[in-house]
Amino acid sequence: MKYEPGDNIIVLLTNEEGKVVEIMNEKMVMIEVKGVRFPAYMDQIDFPYFNMFSQKKPVEKKKVYIDNLPKEKGGMQPKKDNGMFICFVPVFDKDIFDDDVVEKLKIYLINQTLTAFTFNYNLVFNGSSSFQLTNTVEPGHDFYVHDVNFENLSDNPRFDVEFSLVNPDKKKATYYETSLKLKAKQLFKKIEELQLKNEASFMYPLFDVYPDKVDEEKVGLSKLGNAGFRLYDASLVKENLAPARTVVDLHIEKLTDNWKHLSNFEILTIQLKAFEKFYDLSVAHHQASLTIIHGVGTGKLRDEIHDILKLKKEVKSFVNQYHPSYGYGATEIYFAY
Image (cartoon, rainbow, N blue to C red; front, side, top):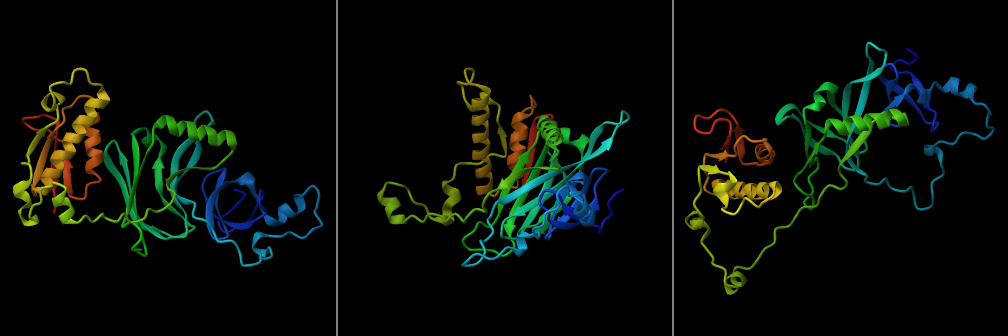
């Protein structure tokens, strides 16, 4: 192996000096330049003293690094917020035919902002959580999360991440949730592009700018009353709510009589609206549980409902198991208040 952890190196493209911090495989290393770590192919770096003698035409001018540039009047330009990214670094190995194959992917969070964030990371395969992590990513830094076996990435991976500010700001949102779904075909295409371009990683944006807090609009009660709205005492709110159900059947024929001309998308939209309606009523009535009958079918409605439930703060747990009345066509939801 040409390099070892701790070796001083120089990046050939930028002439910046750094050091090797990790040997990733036979072709790639993790390097650190000016406090920032990122992967690089070994042919993209060299030892400083080798590079000095390998120049075809030695330049008489003294090297000038970015840190040594004279400051402009008024001070240096401030760094920009470029957003938060999730980065995938393929780790290659040889198969029996001596061809390069992807063994695993290293997952990083790349914080290209001026703000420190706490994050809750959750990797989901086929609707089931596989790996969870809570930690902090500092401004201008990357954070290594974990490795994922490449063969597992055909199981409909979804990367859920919830961000919150390490130092709360009254003007900023309390938290921000985002999710990335990847298909195997997308991954194969990305890796092919990497090999063609001789690059080490690919990234997806999670957010450009952390969102501001949304102020709740305050409306005068007198104006509502004058506009013809009926006002109720908040202590008697349950008396004016529509009745809730403990079991809701979302089969389309149970929701509307005129459904035969509807497209699959229109049917799914009606079913999800009905689910949201009765979910909200269950929460308003402080029900202990709610059973949603979605049927078996292709599983599209079930998966959509499960994705929504994972983001609901009132849900303690939910399960899609065999039921003597509905088989595997129902999901039982349990609430925590």
